[in-house]
Image (tube, rainbow, N blue to C red; front, top):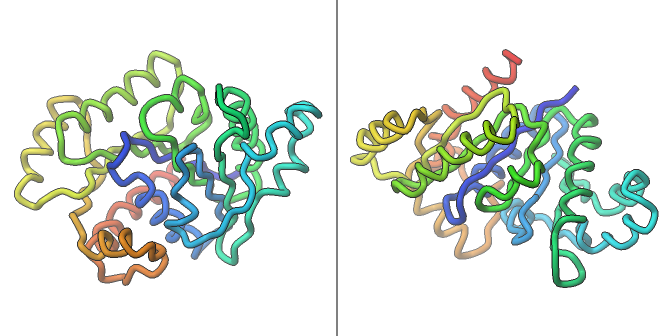
Length: 245
């Protein structure tokens, strides 16, 4: 049985960066499945992977045979890298509702995650993945926020909606990204006021900004980059979570 880690947050907080760092870390130790569940896909680029087909591209072929017959077709679009495999949701071929694609994605997560030690889901921005129950069977939910009141309230809302929908995460954590050192104390205070506790704080890192600009994969980040050093403390806590489950 594998573990499923989902990474969520409002747009622009850096959830894809956190997802990619998790994938890079765990893929050194175990078989990892990376899932880009965001229609506005960025994870392949951040990981330096080329993806030709997505769930959205083959939706019609899957639904014509029934979702229960999807597994063989899904394997056609999984990209196998030396260190991890990746599956991308993508957009439907036609304009309109994402319901079918999300249904397929949900079944794919439930089925495929059993074949990997770790599955990392880069969720779509916002909170829709909760109401669509894309992340219904998640062991560790990580909510990424920036150093803003709005970001904190979004993180709080994730927990509230999950409770309202009876979605139980075994662990739920907040990561504050791109924070200036002088704001850490204030952020800790604001989080506490909202009943939240941050598992870690990630600094603004000019190296990451440069990589984003040039399209350089996260896999090439040096170990002594500020974000990588901060992330080591965070991921060790996540590993402790998984060991306790």
